Length: 329
Image (tube, rainbow, N blue to C red; front, side):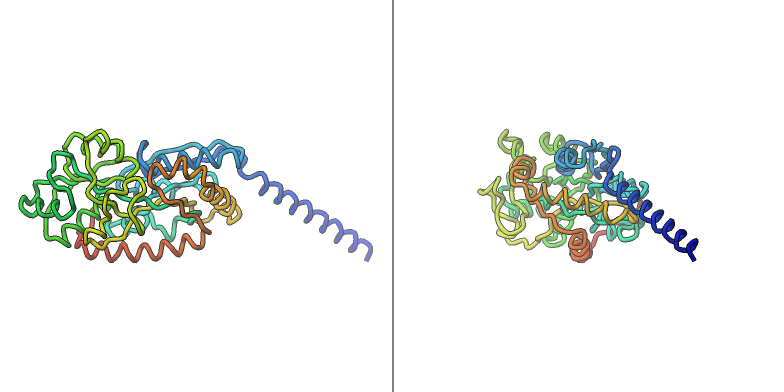
């Protein structure tokens, strides 16, 4: 009997040691640098947002955050790289909303499955959209742009961030609603599209208000409309919204943080808490988000998952309305 009691005590003591060791391991996370995959090339809003988040979170976790740009295929390359990474909490991913909600309906075959492969961490922010034209284009409103496209089918080039991207969807939606035709020219990222837009290779393009503003001030581009949540962009208060001009389309791109499916919940919560702290910091968002016209959001991983469901439903309707053919990989 005494032996049984002693054995039991030994077992309890051993169990306590294991629990304490496990707790210590959890408290030590992260114990090495974290990789942050970004689903866009360097220089765009998504990339700039990722670098701002890395700069803000790194001191809080006492580890470097290494940015790895995986742009292309409307975000599918970055999403695939994220999905195929080891689910150990050391590869985080900032992916654009288009890759999460539009691509599953736009591509004939997706290289990754959002629900199966990815785990939502935090909704970072919404991106306002500015529909811009080269200054050589005489149109000064969306209606005038549509009239030009109607009189000269296919003559106006529309640059986008890739087939199935938000910028492409605005084009095909406008084509279907107005019965016009633009020539679509996709680019791998915003820097390349800016060169094409400012040199007149493409006549129409979409950017965030903050990134296009310097080119408007230099006289190379002009903005015909902005697509925002409820009101005009604070960076361009003189520019009417898409809705004000009679085009009811409230569908903006966004950025979100993801882990691979299977990453422990405590790691996800740790990142969610740290990111939400930054998004609630007016000084941080005023310095990094406001100049790009990015509206910070935040919330729990669960609320982010619910948002993805509702946004995906909107994307399905938009793709159907646009009558867009499935993209072959």
